[in-house]
Structures are given as C-alpha cells and as structure tokens.
Image 1 (cartoon, rainbow, N blue to C red):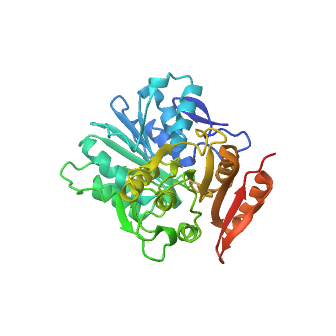
Image 2 (image 1 turned 90 degrees about the vertical axis):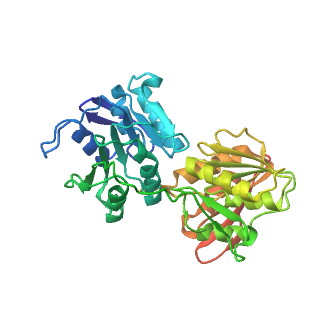
Image 3 (image 1 turned 180 degrees about the horizontal axis):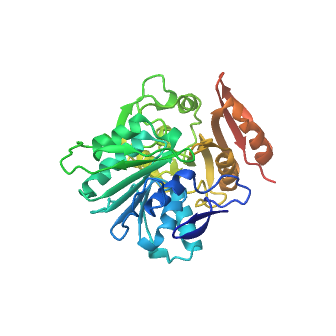
Length: 389
C-alpha cells in the first residue's frame, strides 16, 4: 500500500489483487501530474479545471485518478477487470460510498455527454484509438480533454490520434518523466468510423488453428497477427479429450480454446481473461468457428478465482509476463496456483512460454512434475499433471 497526496486528500492505494509483497506502486508520476494540473497547481499558471459537470476517466490503471476525484462523481471507463476491482477497493478504502463513482468497462455504452475527459495513455495505441473514437461523439466544444502518461509512453503517433479524432493537440513540459496532453474538441471534425474489431484467417502453417477466423478487438495482444508463441502452441495442442472441461486461461483472442473446441466438439470450454476486449474477442472468435452445440463460457476475471476447485480437466495457458510497463512473474504464478486448485486429479496444465522465463521450475514446485512437450530456440511447451496427494 502506498499513499498519494492530492488537493482533494491523501489516499492509501493498492493494486489488485492486493499483495503486501508487491513492490510496484498503485499510482505514477503521470497520475500525480494530471491531478496537480486539475487543481491549478502546475507551473504554467493554468486555472483549476471545473469538475462540476460530467467527468469521464479513461484507462485509470489502479484507480488513483478516480479515487482522488470521487467527490465529483466520475465515470471510470476501463478495459481491465483488475483495474476495475482495484478502483472499487481504493474508493471504498478512501471512505466513499460504492455509488460515488460509476465503474464502466469497454463493453458498456459510452456516456452521452462528457464535460471533462481524462485519459491515462495506454500501452496499446489501438486501444487508445478505439476509445477516442467511441467517446468523441460525447464531446462538445467546451469539453476539457487532458491526457497523461510517462514520456516513454507518449509518441508522435499518440498525439496524431488525439489530433485526428478530437482536435488541435499540444503537450506540456515534462515533469518527473511525465507529460500531459491537451486536446481541444473540434465539433466539425469527422474522424470516420473506428477500425476495430478486425479479423483474419489463419494460414495452413498454424497447426490446430489452420483455417480458423480470428477476431480481435482493440488492445488485445498481437491484434494484427497471430503471435509466434501461440502459433508454436497450436502445433502441439492437446486434443482427443472428448467431453472434457477445458479452460483457456488468459485467453486473449480465444484462438487456443477455439481450436480445442473445434477439435473436440463435445468439450466444454471456459475462456478467461482480465481484459474485457480479450473476452469479447474470444467470444467472437469462438462463434465464428465452433459448432453451435459446443458449450462455452466467457469470464472477465482474475485468473481462475471464479472456477470451483477440482472441476477442470485441461488448462491451456500462454501467461503474460508484463504488468503494464513492468516485467513481473506474479501473474503467471497466480495462474499456475489457480490451475492446480481448479484441476481434477489427473488433470493437466499445458503452458507455452519463452524459454528464459523458467516456468518449468515453478511447475515442478507446484505440481511435483513438469514435462517438456516441445521446444524450439525461443519457446517451450510444458505439461504438468495434478497428482493425488
């Protein structure tokens, strides 16, 4: 837990799920810079921003902005289940009622009117593009639009999106390696329709995925093409499981679970990801390819926390090793722990990952076993079996 001091108060903030051992902070210099600007406390002499109207906060990573502005009733729009739950917890810890803020996701309709739009610049340029397209109709000539990010997150392409979709755009000076973006809505601007979602058909060299139509919403990992780790996994995907319960954990666009469903139509497949656009992509990919009789469930959540223990036969997993800009193995470790609990005795966890990540060590520690199914110079596919103990 760490404290952020603002003009509205001091707040103890945590990430989600909360872990006292986590050294990563739940707010950044970019968040603090934006809050100082809103309060009129920056060196440029700007007046405080009027927050009495409709305030929308986009991409608040752990709720620092939304919590600090909770007395103004902001709407948080997020692509992340973890960010949503962190915000919920931080708002409650600060003493606000649950309905003090509105927690919306990228699945929800955009607000009809926005007077102040605050944008935490995401890592994904496609997600920023999609969000600006969705929100532009709610802006008016008097809307205050301010973006924020670290200097290494704001590029010419970032500013071009604001300029093309919103209106004239400029940036602030850098402070503590953070920068602000100021964009003035132009009611005459017609940016056209947003380009997302997109789809493509996998080529013959895609293993069990050959011929599948893959649908990607904005912000999903490798949205323009199949990532090479998943392609490698598809060449070694376990099949012939019959009426098994299969979980595509960290499903992304859902191609692994969909390929498993096409190979075994009697299976039940659960797709899980913390990203709302990923879950939407998985649902679209599955529906474009799987038989209508194949059973599937789509869950936006924290790893396998919603899956009952001992109910799963097979978990397919291509775990992420980044949390926003930070490299972290915490997500993979949580996924592996959750898989062990969710699997039935004899159930299997299949994992693909970069060789250097050493997932085999973690799997042996948890499961007591780890088998190399396939490897190449960059990737390895591992299999761990849950044994009776």
